[in-house]
Length: 184
Image (cartoon, rainbow, N blue to C red; front, side):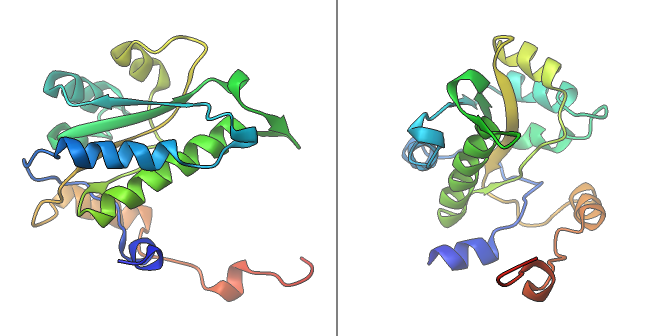
């Protein structure tokens, strides 16, 4: 599959099969993140890989921004959280680059996973305080995002369908709407 095919076909998965992810595939996913570009090559990110079912269940119950909004992650075999120390990155033009760097790394991980048939779902609406407590993340470290990873289940449940509709996941603006040439 070409990179563009991966980009075009990738979608957020909110229902996972019980099949475990092979260790070599997890290593490939993590390696894709490690190889991402970053501000002055600082590589400010840290990835927390969680396979422990009880910890995943705690994240499912308590990590949602609004109550149990991320409860669907309970069935995922793996949850990966990307964190960063803002002091290990740069700041320019009002932009904290730890956010950019971590996002690039996480997206590369999701693309690598998708190429191997493993789904994910970027979670940005989370309770950082609860995630830090569950994963014992130091106070000076920022949680940028987390995602379940797993093989997609055969059929999406009602929850997954409702969230997909709410999020407008299939709606993409045309190039004419987002590209400007030579000036704004």
